[in-house]
Image (cartoon, rainbow, N blue to C red; front, side):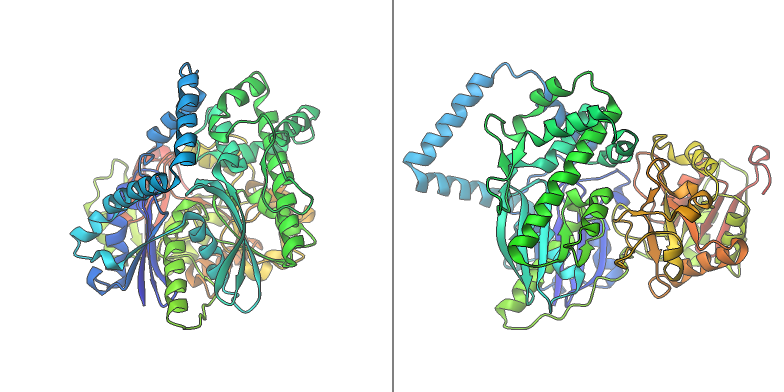
Length: 596
């Protein structure tokens, strides 16, 4: 059975599953070269079909993420404008309250009419969303719409690959289809919703509001606050701000699995002016620390409650909140948690995969077929290119730099040699990884042993905020030399943080947080990516270290590269000196570049 999954909101994407296995998945941004591109993912759909050799006519089903998703927030500028409006002075607030009252009255005196009116609005939205598919010749009967948090839960549950045991599946994000969080039980291939929280109560959206207030891009830069937080987490003012955030939400009873706003607290969509009044003139680092402390304490309490209520310690997580790797670490460390799986890049971009999973699961249930799904495996779901493609792109590219090009019999060994010599190397090889994390195939690599490397990479290309650490890739067979992982939790997707081992910290300072010494590793299994693992192995032969710095291969504010042409453009426009693209090494030879 072939299912095309579509997420047509912010960070749009498309995914193709065959009999429950992910064949291909791509974000629209990779093809348009616009960061977090939203809207109908026309190019991504064509790309996943083309690379899989599947025609639109041969699809069994098309699954959209979200019942009534609109596409009004498709770009960074639209998102910033929407958050800016929340922080503007609202002179017409009394009229807005009159409108709310009228809607409540209408629902009370004519509930059937109101339900029909809302259903008709939903039908019109969905008709607009499927029209591009009808233009491709797909019949409307093949199209289904699936609730937003069902998609998040399905990606987490089916992705973890454990359908034989009961699983506790938690989802949480800013909002989707009127909900911000759910507690679900996965059993025998099916999901049962046990509790949910309405989007007016969204504690996760609080993080995005504060992100905007501090001058960053919401739905994109929340990780910057998480990175700053450790520097001020012991401050008394941070603790006071943490208590301020706690005053907004609470659980109504000791055994409740859903929270609500406290009396007098407005909907989170109306909270901006109150936040501004409370946080104005507070220190940036202490706001970040207070917010992160609140998120960790509040959601750890939620996880514990859900485990107590269900008796299930095997946890699967989905939704944008769980891009917060420090929160994930705290959840992983809970004694009550027996195992943990977080879907890679689990924000809304992954909902194309979740929608396809959910549709497949429902189809199997309707047909009375059991589900046997393997664990997710490697997340390299984009297009692969050949050395011939790379050579063609190199020959056609109008370089502004002076370059030397050589084809290497062993490009991994050559990269390891350069890295051992403290050079920075960009790598574009094999199938592109899905989502927000570079997993070696579209990465910038460096030796992790010197803190100065961080400044070198930032000056070359990344321009990251000075407090933000880089992440490592490390060989699976040597992982316990570098990170503290007593539960032996798998960490192949850079979605979990770990404490680094004190005895090795000084030798890997470029890939750990300078303050709390944590790191966000990609643990590389040889069977998952043999070429990249071999590069690590060759680096270890030269240096004794089975770990390297790995950061995403992109210009600041742009998506990760996809094609060899994208890689060459970023190389040419940046201060990078070395680019390994398939089996070719492109080296800048300008006098200013210096020698090895």
